[in-house]
Length: 243
Length: 352
Image 1 (tube, one colour):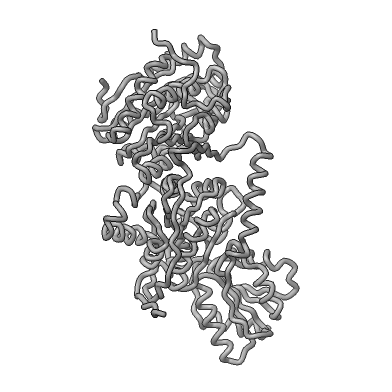
Image 2 (cartoon, rainbow over the protein chains, first blue to last red):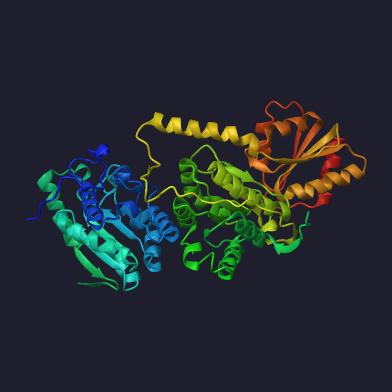
């Protein structure tokens, strides 16, 4: 078994303990991202952007140049950063709302343009910061504040959508925070993709939200397992072919 | 001293000429009439100067105006001198980015070619984006706004906008209209001060920037500090033009391209022997309030002329609070003016 150190070096120690809820998958995702940034030794030349939503809590998370911007707008900000400074590693971190609803046009067009940036989306199947409303990724029959009788059958598959619209050279993957090392692996591949100038890279991670799911530790893991039935994990080739 | 040779160009091309001379490096934009040509002319400049610019790093046509504003801000964070141009509904969408620029004190320049409104409206005459440009977004209107009257002044205003934006780090606007954007005419390409960008994000340091605050007091203090800095620099930035013929019966107030035609009408009224003065703010924000007060003291009546239903007039009244004399309005929302009708209005107000 791989022994993982307690903290990534790229984390700011003075802002820990972090502000995410206990059991939140986003904090774990950011831990994996921190380790990958350490592994690749890219902290000084990375610019990290986070959306409004729970991820805004990560505005002072890293010892890395960071900008917390508006919902979904992290993607065009990173596009501008990369355009101005091609050697910078530009990471946009958004939620399922920022990436797939209020800022979906930015994701779609960054993917189509094959912008050489990395977009990471935390999919927790609800709008968590505002207290648990329906998201584009809320699964059928899921109860949220705005679907008190259970959500309808429609939900959005982000990586699969990107695979349909992006050129074949993009990197696309989905992971689950139930298996953090897998997330670490795909995040590393995504950033390597950007560093070697191969174009757009996109990672969705299923993250636990015990506060809004109203689950305990086991309940959160069970719900993550349920989510995987709708959102299969793994790497996806552009044009919808799953490896 | 060498004489500056006049050039004959379209307003949108003049804007690009001024931007290039001011040191602009990046344009992010989304096409919308009447400012679309700015994108074309910018690309022409980029393609003509491959040693300085490249299509990949100097120009981005984005998916919408929000992305245009935010991508420009991304480039600015990395030290580029970036700008954008938009109009009407595009100006509405871009407020999202301008609001962030206001909070983070980022020096973006935006050219606004006002469209008739509300909504999609029209594309030539309008002064209905004054409120949105000066005070839009969910903030306190800490923005610098120029309202040029002529092609010559449009050129100077764009140059000045880059200078003050990068000096004081407030979002800066050149508020013009379809008439000036699309008009072709002469202008003097006078020297423009060249600005250079400064990177916020450098590999040698770490900066964590945010727009969201845990404590009300924290944000309150920041806004008050920015407000105080804005007020401190205001006297240095605020500019106006006047035609002061001494004690007057009527003082005509207008801004932008309407200001130019109003000035002609005032001149015609003068030749008829009328006692008429003219005053026009070149900056709408910060507003040259003391200069207006001074001009207003010399008149019996005020006449405000504008292509909106009173956005400029409200600004005047706010800056002449408790002014004891009558203020008349000649308001044509989304419609342009000719000299004769303003002259007739001056006669009417003078008689009344």
